[in-house]
Image (cartoon, rainbow, N blue to C red; front, side, top):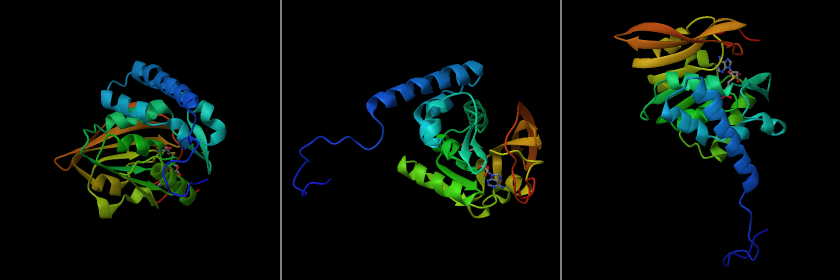
Length: 237
Ligand code: SAH
């Protein structure tokens, strides 16, 4: 309902979105997620904790799962895909060592949740999703929530985005058989690539750093991600 354009409507209008009590409950759950599941398990970067406190994760999961949004587990988001476990999002994000000025590439947009977290910690976020319907939903969600420095692309993220390279940080949110050469190539000097590498049912989360044109990796965690598909993934499934 609208007024004739002369001043405010005669009845107070509830702002679009959830009611204040629900928002307060979700905030409470989000605090527990950040302090108990993430900080107490070893993620110490105040910026990462702050960003995860700020992003409403329940708005990135299907409506019927909002009450599970802050649990320490991945959740289905449709198309056979999942939003990653909050602790893994935090661990991957921390390992990117963002200070606020970076151009970041994410492979595997999924729900758009990690892109939203990254957008608060870097200058520009480019994210690529192979599944067109997930990409579209994520793009609309990010726009609605006001994450204006995230750019969603549809395509094979194992090829990177050469037209926007180099990237100071690259994160891959699906399990790769090995390091995709285009991503190593598109990593800036001094940049960090965080990627799960290994077998389809068990991987090592690697932090790869490029220094003097050479790369060095270290293992951060053992993990299990959905398979990366595409040219340098596990093939089309
Ligand atoms: N970061 C996401 C979770 C991603 S799950 C979030 O915060 O919700 C992994 C995603 O990677 C899936 O959506 C899957 O479709 C996508 N994916 C798999 N292989 C890909 C590829 N080669 N390029 C781009 N996206 C890919």
